Image 1 (cartoon, rainbow, N blue to C red):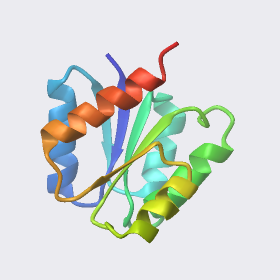
Image 2: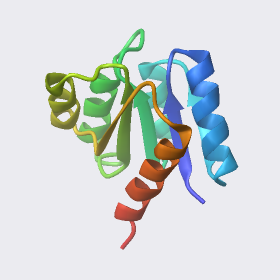
Image 3: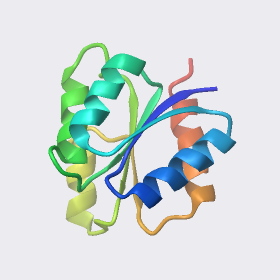
Length: 124
């Protein structure tokens, strides 16, 4: 179906998200930090990126900004997946260019629905 890059420094969450997305038929590239996410996006040219906000090396917010500045990746849908649940956190996420914002703890079913919605918005 779609090619998705998942970046989260928590291996359990990363594995859960990757498993759920693969179960939905997607091709998933799972990485542990922001720089690896940006590199994976350049290699894989994904349809969607799921980024944790708080990661070592480069936050998900900064990774999102980097993707938005790159003409080859600027149109890729980005979902931020984070424990930061305050209104200001969400505003910062959307200001960085995120298309959606999912707060941890999250329902894997809800995440799958949000992924489907984000992918659907990208279709002509």
